[in-house]
Length: 596
Image (tube, rainbow, N blue to C red; front, side):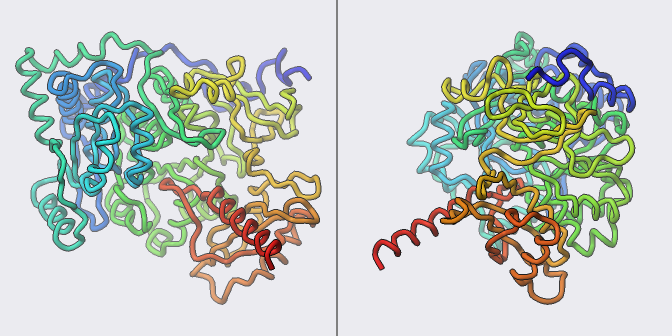
């Protein structure tokens, strides 16, 4: 079948024109992220020398801030530390293993300015996970949060890491709150382990970088590190399970990220006032969603990032929400659902809020509806992957974003929906999303077979199944690998989760398939009781509710009540963990049948 819009304007272009979005991306205004960061910081520092670019807020409300000018200055020093003091070269990999905090933008921007490659790493990784990622990436230097320094002895001897820099949660805070926070961490919480390996504190690294630049003639020398970097050159190794589930590094270039920032701002910029926005950054910046949208996107428009080191429990966000003029929030379904179950948030939602952006996983309609009711502002769902830097599509913010839709492709992006034979499907039919655009990764680091499996004739095969209407709006059906086959019928967990989430007694839900002798697979729902709802949550009530809205083969055969669901640090429910549990349960049952 021919591409549905091969010989006609792509249907979403008409939507662009209707809402004032420019269909074509302009040429990049910067060749690389070093130049982008320097120019943005310089521009907004001219507007105000004291305006905060980043503010870190801990749960008790203590905070610290860095101005645009200071971020530019300190990141220059860190770039010089890497190049002049440590002797690293352009293209060398530097890992950053830190939660949200003021040290993160300084270090990340310094790495990019140095022409090195940033390797984002989850701070909660075990030593085994750290070793795998660092060996695979060939990491030469590591910047680590000091709370986890006890992992270093078992990691360094098994990797190529030669240099370690340590930073604290309260780095760059004023002296009094910094002293209090460090004291609480060390004495009361006892979360600062002794450091038994050679290392440099971030303050000392910056001082050495500053001295190196002074010796070289001043800060202008730092621009020599990035001035020759071209858009196609590697900026990030962003590790992901990807579309095949095996951990690997997505190769994200400077051009990928710069284009994706332009695409994001093209879709949402009509509702953003440069120099006046304030975004709540509860999602970890080491995740590609917050890295591009919050760290880079709001830097570009001179917005203030309110950084939350740990969003769990969700009450940790209270002081930040109460004390700052939040105009934007980025998050995932579980974050929004969690906030809606906090009395303080429902009673006093952010007064300056303009809109919220949801991504990372499906936004449940029940959550979206209640969010609009409580905040009186729109919540727009988008779609993306690590491999696409990440934004692929987004709901225009004009009017009410469509519930259940991931929006239309971002400018400069093309989409195909294909069936199992690689043939394009028609409007209204489900097909795997294929993406082409300037935000698509270069491939997987040292993984040619994995790269070839997903990059096909210039298109990225995402592994996600969607339907598209005749205006170009898409609706995610589910991930191909999560689909449940019941008596030959395709069952998509998202659809069932949406139905169950409508129940007032349900806080969270995840659906997976279980082996079944009669139907091949059966549907199982894991549900968490809403503590705000009186009475117990009964499995029979969930099944009865599903029968009202779902065909019989889609109704869960079993319901498991849990106190919580396994999640990633971003808040995405880990269906794979639940599926592993089902597999172990099934294998145990088989053993019991063989040896009664």
